[in-house]
Image 1 (tube, rainbow, N blue to C red):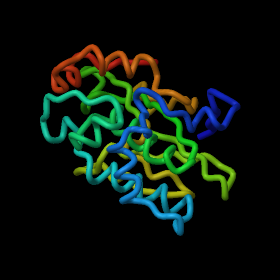
Image 2: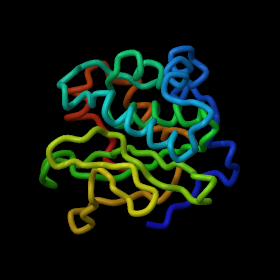
Image 3: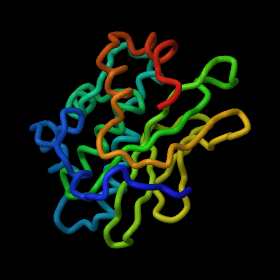
Length: 202
């Protein structure tokens, strides 16, 4: 799909934010473990993506009530929903000077429209050597979900079914969307939040 940037300033996608706090010592330590100067930006992007996808549990999958938001907390507790995991992936990549933004989809919350909708988060990464943005979804794979790193054809976690009122939002945000941050800050139980309080639209 055709994506467009919220900001024309590429450095806005490298900012150290409250939710993308890559100056935090725990993020710095993990970055030192994952990356080295001999790696290309594409190699770093793949390493970071697969780490967040595979090593950070999705809270719903493990039925955890803990709510995480800031990248350092997501890494510390090794869990979070897609919103939180997108914050961690952005932090790791921004720490390496790789511009990373936030993208969102509107999906059915479960398997039918009558069970409601939710906003799902993923990331967009600017690959300078290719001069293009690619989208990656580090939600975490499971039965029916097989997201992969790809610089060519997107291999995201969820296909969009427009006939069922699902949609891709084309904006690449420089900061996590305020609605996303608010829901994470306002809730204390991830399972209740996931079932009843996720935003249905941006």
